[in-house]
Image (cartoon, rainbow, N blue to C red):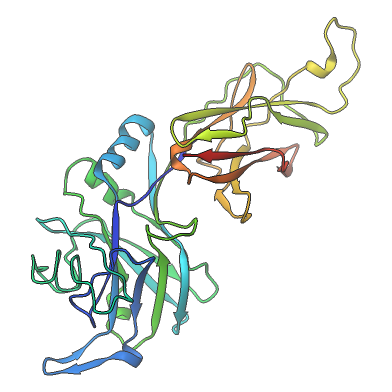
Length: 355
């Protein structure tokens, strides 16, 4: 496998209208500008109605993936958050992420936005920790503006899930160029402080759904080296030779595939022609679908989910600890044979990841 996900150690969102409120155990992460309807007027003047999200992944997890799984291969990293709901007035808007800059860690806390009275025992708009403890240098969080930030543009018809390239930030943490205190994700300044209306909420690490945030790594681990003949035409049979019903959520597994002609040509030989193995062409990729929701967990990728081959057939590698446990996954193959592209998905080719 060349797709691997790790999950946050902590996350929260912070609100300018509630500068001491903590939301560390809320099931959603909000990023918004509701100035058009919620601008506060105080003795200090107008206070923008803004919410930003903080999210952090363990440095040890990041380093383990890069050192022990990716090695010297080129890789990309993306920050993935999945939309819970959104109310967006402007047709186009942009979100941006920066590495948080602070000499002290921020505390996740145990608050929820619905708490009455408000919980103030963790990070907030005004504080890194409990209210009154370790103020941000600037209210609303501190981040590096001279480091490699990232952004993602959204248009009216686009998918509102976040999938933002954060490779450069991850490399800074891995090389210890800066300390890892996570990401701050926010609207761009031109939108955040305007009188626009953008309100988005994403599932947090405390969600009870299958959509927690993730830091996704991708790299090419494929090897194509086989003396077996390639399949031709569309009339062939593909099967998994070592598929099991269950896998523990640890370790790695090489799924092996065998291809043969559906109706092989008759020939004079001592073994059955139905045992003559072939291999899929180099333009072959694997994917994983959630069996219950039908959503792609690992989508086909021409760079990062290439299927490998050797003299026994085809294979690809899956890291089970990069998948959500207690879920069923369906294996899929996409290949192009003689200029015909086909997706092979047999509902019998599924497995469960268990804790």
